[in-house]
Amino acid sequence: MTKKFNKRNQKVNKRALIIGITGQDGSYLAEFLLSRGYEVHGLIRRSSSFNTGRLDDIYQDPHESHRRLYLHYGDLIDSHSLLNIISESQPDEIYNLGAQSHVRVSFDIPEYTADVDALGTTRLLDAVRASKLPAKIYQAGSSEMFGKVLETPQKENTPFNPQSPYACAKVFSHFICKNYRDSYGMFIANGILFNHESPRRGKTFVTKKITEGLADIRLGKKDRIYLGNLDAKRDWGYAPDYVEAMWQMLQEEKPNDYVISTGETHSVREFAEEAARLIDMDLQWKGSGLEEEGIDAKTGQTIISIDPKYYRPSEVDALLGDSSKAKKNLGWEPKVKFKELVKIMMVGEFEERKLDSSAYLS
Image 1 (cartoon, one colour):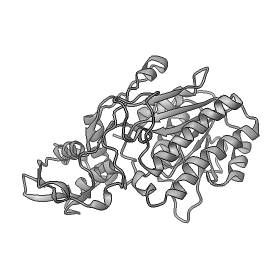
Image 2 (cartoon, rainbow, N blue to C red):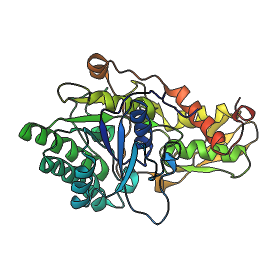
Image 3 (cartoon, helix red, strand yellow):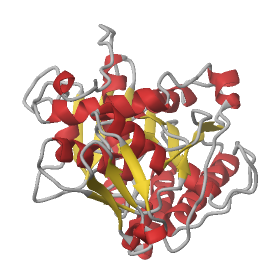
Image 4 (cartoon, rainbow, N blue to C red):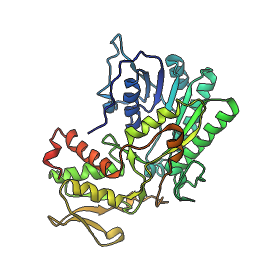
């Protein structure tokens, strides 16, 4: 049930550069833009192993004469490569989705996180300014910038209160974009996106860890999964919905900043319960704190345990977005809500294994 965008036979009239094209959002955005007739360029980091698996469905051989997808080696910590790629691709639109995006990991590598997520944005903006291209720029912000929230729900003018190196770096990026926008008249839109998931989510993120782990348990390949804070609440949406919002921001006459969210909040515990229910498990809880366990009441098997290493040094308890500005100005609303999102991800687990999901989902 992975989202597929409808192909449209349109003349190519725009070029886009996606920083972070190999990630969840980058791959969906590339599909979306190609479906609208764009020529798409993507920045990828050099690796000894292939990291383009999310692009398999749209990959085009470099020798094809009519291709519209081009991949370039570069890095947000290398200004020279950014300048070269911008000069070569001449984009009308630039989407900066590149980041060290794992919040918990940012506590382990704070300097690298800041270099990529904060200074990387600055390098990109300066490269565009130096190129003198009138490109429109989208900067990927995060609901994590709100941190320990100062009001609920969170909207565009809610004060930031970041609680991780990742969130601090994203706050820097948000304000450096506003500064370049005001100082140099550049078209830069900040998207403050709340959590958005899909079957393409990275394996270390909690939603993917839950769906993949429960699928493995259902198939007898694993006994249990280990999670952290079960009571953390997030506003979870569907990634393909959110990349359309990114594009819509760059179709405006003037740049602006937008919160993108579903307006619903659910806990990690709820996500696990719904995912388990879909594959005919009855998830019940016993114990408390670090001793809490999730048990499949139908079998008596402990399938979820707590590992304190997955707790953050500074926790963000609950996030809930108000995207009424995006609805009013862009006409954007989420199409997929919580239960449908969990089902899409669970179905995706079995499709990924080349199995018929209907044989496992209740």
